[in-house]
Image (cartoon, rainbow, N blue to C red):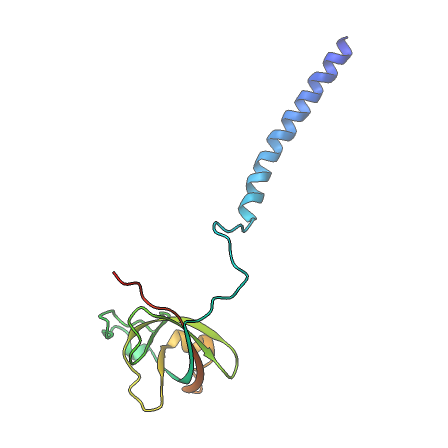
Length: 149
């Protein structure tokens, strides 16, 4: 009888020990799981419109100047100038030569050179490989128009 009691006590202690040992392990494991809060579609987001044009860039010498929508220009922001897209539009700019791309927000007007479709910030130009060429062929994909108030 005494032996059975001792065995039950030991068993209970082992169960409690295992339980308390696994609690922190479960919390650590749960943090590393990348579970979406909303179901994700396997389908890529389709652009509202796609077209091809030439892109150029403008950079640090414009830092601090006011853009057409009233913001202060930042050459390290993911922004661009387009002649007529609404401010706040989101556009994926894809360098057709190397396939590199970045999504930008339209916050300025331009470019004012004939044959150019978009001016991107210096950061975007670096990311898509545009800085050395100065002007390159890009595919523009309108991803989102700004929300109306």
